[in-house]
Each structure stands twice: as structure tokens, then as C-alpha cells.
Image (cartoon, rainbow, N blue to C red; front, side):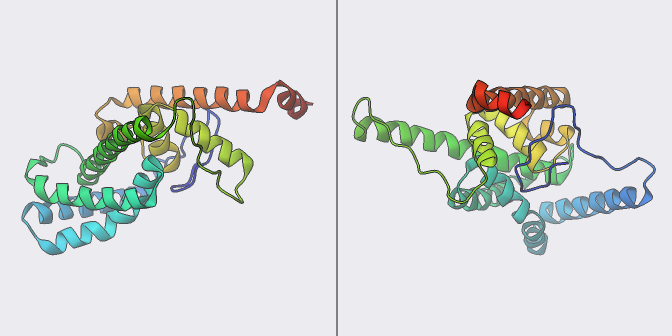
Length: 221
């Protein structure tokens, strides 16, 4: 099972370990979480300042983790989380309770990440046209003191399409269920499962290409 906040690779056949339906402790925990979610949503809907403060305490760390994984930059992640809470405050009247309040807030966060990423890509494209001589490019230095496999995996994840990368990170790194991811991204649960399968397949292909035939033969011997 992948742990939240860590980039752990697993086989496509391996599934997230969910609590058994007859697990009374897990059922009690889910009921308490739903009750807390409902209480926070009602407090925010009524304009209660303490409810917004509690919402920040409950969700800000998870939001920063998600934003950091989607954006790859701590400063941008902080900015996006702040923007998300502003949008929650401004748009709380649009929350109709058709999904969990937490899922609704995470969807706003993901949309803010997408918006910022698009803006940065447009600015980067403009800057590169203005500053980089034709045929020349600049590569960012690789992080030091990191495991080679982890670095290779993160590089491959960065090459996935934004859609596949989001599903992969939300499921494998952040631990969300496919139903929750579907609500966040505005897709079906099945579409989320298919995207995860495609992401894992592409990652395995890219990792195999990076290792090369020689390394693959050596690892199999």
C-alpha cells in the first residue's frame, strides 16, 4: 500500500488495502469523519469563522501535500492552498452537499493547481522564446543524495500527461479512492481506474527504456 506523501511504486495488480466491511472500528471512524465533514460544511455555510479556522487546521497539511505533488514546488503549493481557501470562502454558497465537503474542497484545490500550472507554462513558453537562443536549452540540476530509482520514477511521472499524472498521484501518493478522485476531477470512477492503469503501464514502459536491454538482462540473471 502506498503511504500518503511518499512516491511508492507498486505493480498494476496490487490494490489499495481497504478496511473490511465488518470492521466496526473502521465503520465508526468513517461515521465520525462524515459527521465532522457535515459539521464543518454547515459551519462554513453559515459564515462561522471558527469553522473556517477548523477547516484550515484539518485540511491544510493534506492540501499542501497534494499541491506539492501536482506542482513540484513548495512556494507554488503554499500559494495554491491560500487561493483554494479564498475560493472556498467566496464560493461556499455553491456547495449543495451532493458530495463530501472535503471532496468538494479538494476539487477546488486541484483546479487551482491546474490553473497555476497553465499560467506558468504560458509564461515559461514566452520567456523561452525571448531569452533562449535557438537550439539551446537549460536543464535543472538533479537533486542530490536521492535514490536513483526514485529519481527515475519521479522523472517518468513528470512526463505523464497532466490527467494521468493527477490520477496516479492522487491514488498512489495521497491515498484517495477512485470514487473520490472521480469527484475531484469530474470523471467517472471507472475512468479513474482506467487512467491509473494507463499511467502505470506508461511508467513501466518508460522505466524499462531508461534501464536499457543490458541492465534488464543483468537484473533478470
